[in-house]
Amino acid sequence: MSILDVPYAAPETIIFDWHATLVDTHDAMYLAIDDVLPKLEELGLYEHLIDIENSKTVDDAKLVKYVKDQRKLHPKIKETRKISRTDIFEILFGANKEAKKAAHKAFDFSYRNHFGKVTSFEPRFEHVLHDLKAMGIILAVITNRKREFMEKEITCVDGHDWSHFFSAVVCGDDVEHRKPYPDLILKTLEELDIKPGTHAWYVGDSTTDIISAREAEVTAIFYNGAGWDQDWIDKIFPGTTKHPHQPDCIVNNSLELLGLAKKYLDSNKIIQT
Image (cartoon, rainbow, N blue to C red; front, side):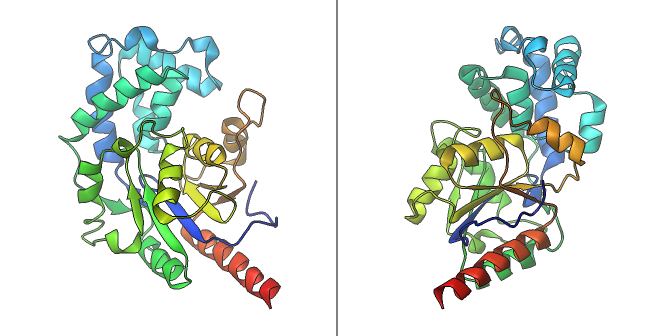
């Protein structure tokens, strides 16, 4: 999969995921997870870890086994900086909503002790946001993290305040269900007074982002900022009956996203004339 020449609607709005799409907060995230995993028994979560044989991929099964045995993440996961806490909790707890809710709550408690430093995932992303907004696209951002964290982080990206770019900011504690459920996207569209559809684009870096976009019935764009190869992408988006959700397209960087938006806006102008 790559940027595809298919009839998407031109974007009226682009909704972004926050962590690992627009910004990098890996250090604080992994520190908070390091706090949570040794407490799985104390939190009543160890017994709710998914059965290894029910894991989506072989790599997921390895992660579950390591956490069960060691009560921590494998060092390589933190070294590669390619997986978010939401995906980690999805891998560990599967479809168990209550277990994931409890894990996120414990994470939030620990994240409060570590968050603060925020850097742009790509140095040019601030300029790309400016260009997208100048093209008349309504921008919004969603995140699974609590509003108390987001309200600080969005004002200090490499020392800059990014809040002016976004017409809506929706956080995990604003909805009943975090991603991969569609609640965050649907609430954002409601605040923007925009109906779900292909004219609403959602850009995110994880499988949970794509599931959320598909469930919300908007255009699902996978941001491959982590540089996954094609074999890995095929594994995480197999398109099977059990795991049917796949992105509409993949962009590898912010300039590809900007080009994609410009392409469809220009096509829309041609059609209208």
